[in-house]
Image 1 (cartoon, rainbow, N blue to C red):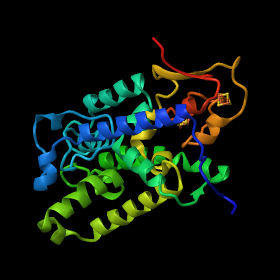
Image 2 (image 1 turned 120 degrees about the horizontal axis):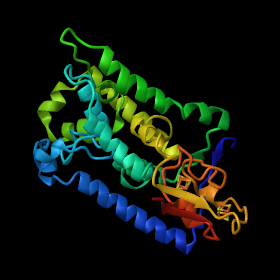
Image 3 (image 1 turned 60 degrees about the horizontal axis):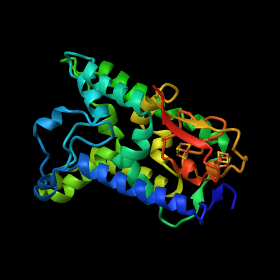
Length: 294
Ligand code: SF4
Ligand code: SF4
């Protein structure tokens, strides 16, 4: 069927080792960011001092287990807060992780990336988005960043000069999954309060989750404003890829396994690369090198 394809089925031993490491590491990272186990038991949000600290990933402040704050939520809270309008701390955190790791954060640390990868494991036919649709859609995440995270909270304000966190309120699927749905399951009083806004957010969540079953990293590719911010650092991040053209045999195995459809040999430091490392593991000649540049 046009536009559909099956993922490759015979990974090498090197790929299996990489895959095992990646799953274990990412599950551990998600557990670390959401380590307040009592929150899941009591259905209450953690409010300790570590909530002042921004984590580098899209992990909702309202997740019952969250030990830190989401940088996108914090950014909107400050911009829409009516007093400071700008947070050197939040932007500094994003810049620090962006400069050192770039989108390695998306590939190895983000819990919502992990959720999407788990869903993509469901053995249904996958969709390969045609280039003429895929390419313009990739810019959507930058538009979401500019409109919903920066402009609306700053300018669509109430009588006190305060703006809503528009991305969190109307779009963020990580927030709905970790904060909304989980808290609703755990707290019957909240369930009674669910209205039109929650129904909208639930529909958006289903859209993103269903999309992830068929399209690799559906939300990361087209919609994530934090991924868009980190993408700005891809060309300058200390962690980067280099291709050894003297050993590359042009087999394109790297391209075939890439969840973000990056042409790795041509653009090893593409803004779309989430540094998942699948291409490195698949390369039969070890021609893709990941290194920190000083
Ligand atoms: S280029 Fe390699 S590291 Fe980047 S997303 Fe694709 S497979 Fe992952
Ligand atoms: S998998 Fe390795 S050898 Fe094959 S095209 Fe990619 S970089 Fe070159």
